Length: 89
Image (cartoon, rainbow, N blue to C red; front, side, top):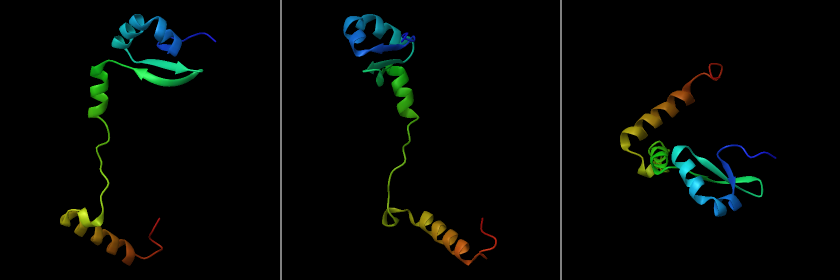
């Protein structure tokens, strides 16, 4: 199986770490183990950019929900519950 650019095995990483790191500074590099992708090596700037774009949602409960949002939620539930079922999708 021909190796695609930007993909290396864990053995390659042991033998050619300098070259692989230099490539990873230009673009993300995939490290495989037993022919399966296992790791991605990338520049810190790319990692930081990914972290900034990560999902920052948190889990909460009704008890921790801000009262304005809870009021809006309750109103939406009441409107939905009182709507004629033939209008619902």
